[in-house]
Structure formats: structure tokens, C-alpha cells
Length: 349
Image (cartoon, rainbow, N blue to C red; front, side, top):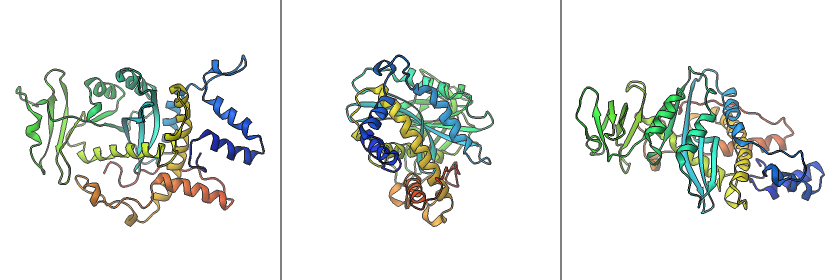
């Protein structure tokens, strides 16, 4: 998959057959059956890949290659679609402008499915993987905010960092009066942080971080359980990296938009291959990125990120850099690089 820059079964089978001197049709059939349920395979002893059993090992794999001096981790929750065929709920590790999927659920776009049990199940799969001493921040956009999600993240010992809408109310710590959230974000340049109880109907206690930077359409309102002096609202900019991860899954990388699979269970197994390929490519590319001079990296804004139109992004993403580095090792007859994770200066700035 890394070499052909595609997740297509037919393309992968063609390359593997050429490399291993096997019949292309045989290799293709084995790759197809790897994604099937057990009952769809011939034979009494056939088994199927249980994808959910791989989520915790995927996260453990990332942590085993993580910089031992860095005990902070940023995760993002988000949903993406594949046309009118699939909806994907994904949890990803955020790293150097990229995202590595570690847990996901795929269902048909036409299927009426409640997201709450799906998100709770995905989070539960990752319980007890990260050492308790680590700082784990979980970011999600406005469309995913819910009081039960805030509570579920905290139950894991992690810290929610959830963006909320400004159309609710909040009660400052030490007060009994609920005020409109919109009053905290009335104009560009405003910023505020403090302990609050948010929302009158389903109250949640925590810290509210508010800022409206020049060049943004509206303000950020972030609800977290961290104390005001422990968190920086600029951390929320890391959430955008999961969008880059979805791009790498599709046209920017593995070309998943061209899949002809129609069964969500098979697609979930296919995603496992893409997740491992992404982990490998990004870890290798991140090693190269960590050694590049600072002038090739986006400038680090404080305390808020500047609008994207004014930033200078990396010349190559860690994903693209990793794929090229792996290819160069093969062409030069060098051992394949395994990679490691070095979060760098743009992580939790």
C-alpha cells in the first residue's frame, strides 16, 4: 500500500504477485477474503479479523515508539463520509500535522444509527492503554459536543477539550446567575478563561476557554476539565490535523474514495490495513521532519494560531515524507526504516 500509494486490492495484488512470483488472481482472492466475515469464506476452519480487538494494540504500538521524554498525547474524535456510501466515526492520534487512526466504526450512510453507543464503545476499547501519569487531551468539534462524551472522556482519566456553541448559557464559579455564552465572544480580540457551569438543562462543571482571533469567522469556546492555568486554548488548533488524516485516507494518500466495497464490516477491516500503513508512513516521515531546519516548518504562533492563509506549512507532510523515505530505502537497497514518534515543538505549545 505504501509503495503503490493506494489501498486498492487489485493494485496491491498485482505488485505482490510480481514480487512473490505468484498468480495475480490467487493473491487478489486472498486479499479480498481477508476482509470477509468467516461465514463468507469456504471451509470449516476459516476465521475473521475482529477489528475492535486491534484498537488497543494500535495505540500501544504508537506509544511504544513515542519519545520517552514526552508524556503528553493529543487525540481527536471526528466523523467523515465516503460519498453517500459510508459514515466513519474515528479516533486518531494527532502527530506533526497528521492523524493516525486507532479506533473506528463504519456504517452505511443510509443506516439510521445513534452515534452515542458507537463513540462510547470506541473509547472503551482504548481504556487502560495510556499510562495514568500521562496528560491525554481529547479534542472534538462543536457538532460532537455532548455531556455524556465529556463524562466518558473523564472516566478514562483523560481530559476533554471540546468546542461548544455560543448559543447556551454559563454560570461563573462562585455565582448563581446564568449568563449568555455569547457575551464572552462579542468581538474579535476577546479572550476569557475561568471555572464555570455550562448549560442550564444539562449542566457540566469545568473550565471555559474563550478567544476570538483576528482572521477567524467566529470565536472558539472550549470546555475542558483542566484548570485555567493548565490549558491553552491554542491546543484546539491540533484538532484540524484529523482532517489531514482523512485526506490521507482518500485522495491525498490511500485513494479509499475509489473502493468498490459495499459492506461496512469489510470496510472496517480494510481500514485496519490503512491504519497500519499510515502509522508506518507517518512515523518514518516524522523522524525526517524532526531533523529538518526550523525554516521549513510552520511558524509557531502564541497564544493563538494565525489564520491558515498567513501560515507557511511544511513543504511536505510527514505522511508524504514517510512514503518517499521508504521508497528511497528500497531503491537504495537499504533496510526498511521502522520509524519513531517525536512530537516536536508544535505539540502542546
